[in-house]
Image (cartoon, rainbow, N blue to C red; front, top):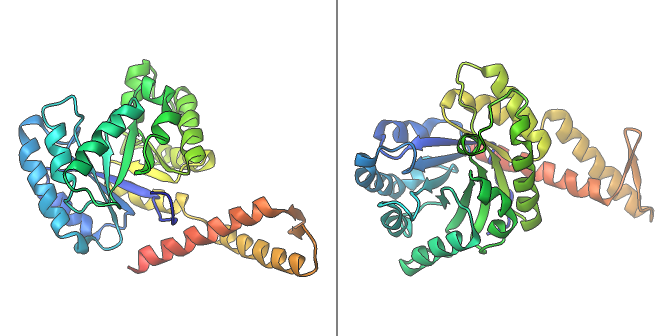
Length: 293
């Protein structure tokens, strides 16, 4: 499941039972949409939502380059097994498993999906929202080749930790760091958790900046009004892109002279900086293609 870079600056949760919202999502400048059969769908609406999500995925082309992910219910609920069976061949890019706390939980879900015809390119995303799950982040990230992304569930995690939501998110930093390490060691993407206060635009932008500085690929969102800031903050800026190009040009010139290092803007450039510059430009190009599409 590891491979090409794709933008995941903004990934919006959307109730699986809301037809109008799913229709509107076709026009939103968002990188990914999580069609949520779990928390955002009431218990008595879950079977109907499952059928609606399947119909939405049948019209997958209408969503363009947006990544479509379905969050299913857990296997310890009355709906989890049927969700996996229904989504195995529904056409989603990924299935998001809630409250993953072990590698075995991932493998059990994969076994059900594959038993019901899941294609080779159906990815697994894992919600990291329990204390035990965070402590087992490495084994979860390495649990199966289908695993492609870890998603922080900071709201449930804060509740389980008896922690508070603070502006600097200090109570979350240990969990965020452990999951980041596990994701990067396994070559996975990783998304930051949601910001619940829709009126706190300054706090939301600060959380986005912190998430990017820590190393997250993007942020999960609960409302379309959060898309613009997430897209802007998690995208390489103009100066960042220009510097990446200068690094690659200087590196090529240095290699042509037989040198192993180069200097750009007064700073030493080595191979690790070249790798980072190449990733910056690949992400920049992927975003351009996303927006053009």
